Image (tube, rainbow, N blue to C red; front, side, top):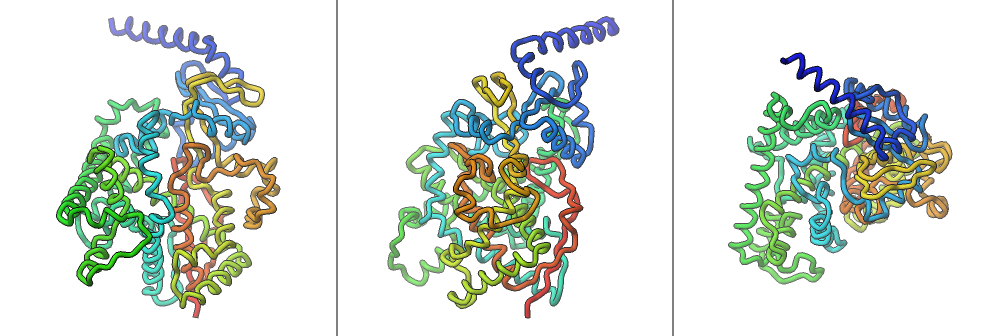
Amino acid sequence: MIETIILFLIVFTIMYDFYLHHTRNGRLIDLIPGPPSIPVLGSAHFGQVSQEDAWHLIRFYTDCKYPIAKIWLGFTYAVSIRHPDDLEKVLSSTKHFEKSRIYDALRPWLNDGLLTSNGSKWHTRRKLLTPTFHFTILRQFIDVLIEEGNHMITSLKECEGTVIKDLVPFLSEHTLNAICETAMGISLRSCDTFQEQYRKSIEDMGNFIVYRIQSPWLYPEWSFALSPTGRQQAKALKILHGFTEKVIKEKKLYHEHTEDRYLKNLGSTTSTKVDDLEVIEIHKKRLAMLDLLIAASRENHITDLDIREEVDTFMFEGHDTTAMGVCFALLLLAEHKDVQDRVRTEVVDVMKETEGKLTMASLQKLPYLERCLKEVMRLYPSVHFISRRNTEEIQCQSYTIPVDTILHLNIYGVHRDANFWPNPEVFDPDRFLPEQMQNRHPYCYLPFSAGPRNCIGQRFAMYEMKAIVAPLVHHFYLEPVDYLKNLKIKIDLILRPAHPVRVKFVPIK
């Protein structure tokens, strides 16, 4: 009996695979070039290699099948595109707006926050959250970013002399502190056990997400939930959600007790006269994105769960991406002393005007540093791909992509495309001089995506990277320890080194 059932399942699977490849969608996908595949399994061997090897395989096949490549993963197929014309068709349209099922790995943590939501819910949330990143609101967060940069300098100087740092954990600690204060108004600097658990749980969730994304077709949701890794994820989620819910509750109580007086003029540029006690209290209870969401909830009827989704999304998107951006910036500056010296000169000149202190205005007076950061994000974009689901057929170059395809928008690939970037492997900040940018295709540079679903926090991210890099080059010479020519990258939602990458910080006397 069991043998008969097994035989039936094998025959059914083979017949279904044959049927799938002979539907209109299957025929269109099979016309697109791609890696070798076998019946039923397709190219599922991609999920059976290390994260580093998976990265190299994807890079190899998307390069040699330029500018479009497909992959079959069992009964699921995906198409990778990297030509700016094709990327524009997807990103500028509201017809290919939905995120693909790849982002389902994030839903246990983020639920339906701005990153993962679709349709009317996304439009409502985007409209609600856009004022949070308005210039007059954004400058309320700059002090936090500058303070965190100063904490970083202090921690390095406490080592007394030259110090070598593994950049990823060093920077992640500080960017997590910064986003936690700006998103929730809570510092992670205390020795509170719950806060340490929160920090550790964020790291754990990153690992669980990668595990789920690399081989989703081999690990159904139910089997993952029952596995030891699934149970560990459930524990991490309990801590993450519990911490956010605790902060939301405390913040709402605080604003109720103060009759919302600190929420009423959040976007106001005028100052109101308050006594010393109120000034101390406002500083103690620094307003954050969470406060803006609470204020919005008074008029827009959003629930505590809605607020938690967005705060958790800010936490996920806001610390790791920035940490990786600064990591690659420091590695590149360490290897390019001429560029580093020019950045330092610019920073020193600006700091003289403000008596050695950074301000929002001084961060805006660092055009060369900004060009450097843009070039860093070209070579090493933190978000190296975006995944969408198309609701209509798309004509891309010589091929048609059928409806309901997982679209892999290859940002890393288009950023290094020699057809649009001469000598693409060379680090050259002057690529972003106004005259160099004038005739460039608008969709060949996408570090913050583009179109209606572009990154809502891109100005915040640029300010944060400047607030970290500027004081570092002001106080330290950067010297290379691990070189980018030896860099190995692992497959992940975020572009991430597969091994420690270190820089030497030499104090400037």
